[in-house]
Length: 377
Ligand SMILES: Cc1cc2nc3c(=O)[nH]c(=O)nc-3n(C[C@H](O)[C@H](O)[C@H](O)COP(=O)(O)OP(=O)(O)OC[C@H]3O[C@@H](n4cnc5c(N)ncnc54)[C@H](O)[C@@H]3O)c2cc1C
Image 1 (cartoon, rainbow, N blue to C red):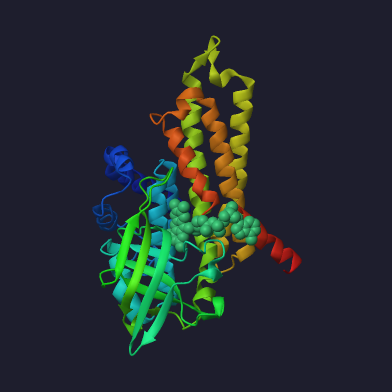
Image 2: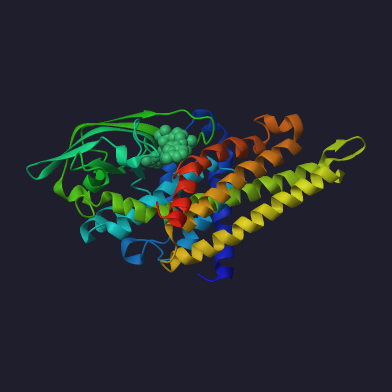
């Protein structure tokens, strides 16, 4: 898609998101959940995973378009919805599209584009977050079937998900080399799910999942047996690119709201925007956003060409999410006490931002990864 077309598409998507979300957003935040039908609404409007190829019902665009939709949700301040959208369109869909068999792609992708199927990815467990190699969920072969047992925590889209990609041990004791991925149809018996309440991103559906003797068909295996860890590592750059897209657009949305506010609010006989401190803070925030956006555009182009490296994606995720949190904190400060109230959207930008430095690999894990590429271990 050409740049001008992408801008038009962004504007169209932004209007659609505002129309479908804004009238209900406060209620959904209070309820800590979006309705399941929102996914069908997005699908009917052609807004889910546009980069899926046309033979599976998508629009066959480059990943830039999917990322642009995540940006618009984030810029509008719908941080929780952006995260759910991202897991579905920017993570689960590419896992299936890049690693699924023809039969698996036919089975799942068209329904993920239409919103009939909501996707989730379940790696994290109560005893294994940053250290994914420590997972304990098992999938044991029994005849033609797999029997899944274990629990996962903090799974985005966990309550609504119809399809969960689950990481499980198929050769316990071998860690990463004994881990496989499964396409789990949540309508099968043996799954319990519990919603998890958070301090931000309330509209993001986050859940604990419990698998008890869940029997999966042989064709639920995604990719090769015991190669699940390699697939997860392969897909992390795209996940991190997406989190950076959310971070930068949210910072831009927060800055726009702050500029409007400081032009109106007065203290000591002048607008807040007239104080040199305000002007310098806003200038610094804008500069930080511009620097991160430049790196992001470079990484998005590299990803589209299949050239984005794991360490560069880690640098981008680290820089963009740290920038998001610090710049939104600066913006909130300029709202004074009003910034701390739920009436002003800047407070939601602030609470929604905090998790960005933790999920998808924490800032500390990003630093480890970047250092490892320099030092060799
Ligand atoms: C809202 C939300 C949504 C999420 N969505 C998903 C999802 O859809 N799917 C999924 O699988 N997971 C998801 N997660 C889980 C998320 O990815 C993990 O929380 C994250 O990877 C951190 O793991 P942990 O919480 O177990 O923290 P821990 O791994 O226990 O880490 C605790 C602290 O120790 C630090 N630390 C750990 N190891 C090191 C080290 N080697 N060096 C230095 N510091 C270290 C960490 O950076 C962190 O500060 C989500 C989490 C949340 C809260």
